[in-house]
Amino acid sequence: MAEVESFQLDHTKVLAPYVRLIDAEKGPHGDIITNFDVRFVQPNANAIGMAALHTIEHSMASLIRDRIDGMIDFSPFGCQTGFHMIMWGEHSAEEIAKVIKSSLEELASPEFGWENVPGVAEKECGNYKNHSLFGAQEWAKKILSEGISKNPFVRELI
Image 1 (cartoon, rainbow, N blue to C red):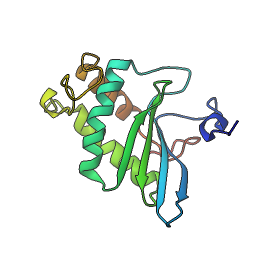
Image 2: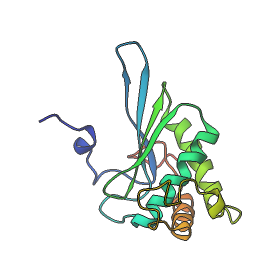
Image 3: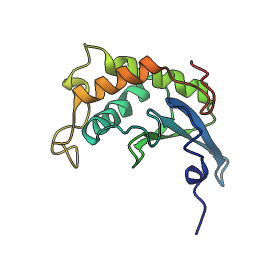
C-alpha cells in the first residue's frame, strides 16, 4: 500500500493553527502543483463541527480565489481539524498563511452574511441543510485570536 504523507506527520508535535507546505510536484509537462496542510485546530484536541466546517469550506473557496490566482481546491480533512489547499505553481507557506488570514478576517466580520456564502442552496450543495454561518464565524474568530503560523512545529505567526 502506498504511503500517504499526512499519515507520516507526527500529529502530536504540530502546533495549530498553521500552514504547512506538504509538497510541490512537477507534472509530466512541467506544471507544478503545490499542496498545503492548512490546520485550524490542534489535532486530537479539538475538531470543527461539520456544519461550521462545511460553511468555512464554501466561504473560503470563494474568499481565497478573491485573493490569489491558481487555487485548485480547498478540501476539509475528515478529522475536522483543517483543510488541504491545492494550488497551481510554487507558493510558500507564508504567502498562503497571509491569504488564509485575510480570508478568515473577512469571514469573521459582522458584514459577512449568508448572501456572501456561495453554494448553499439545494441545487448547489449535496448537503445544503448542514451549514452554520454562526459556527464558521466563531471558529474564524478563534483561529485568528490564536494566530496563524507559517511553521507547523514552532509558532512563527504571520
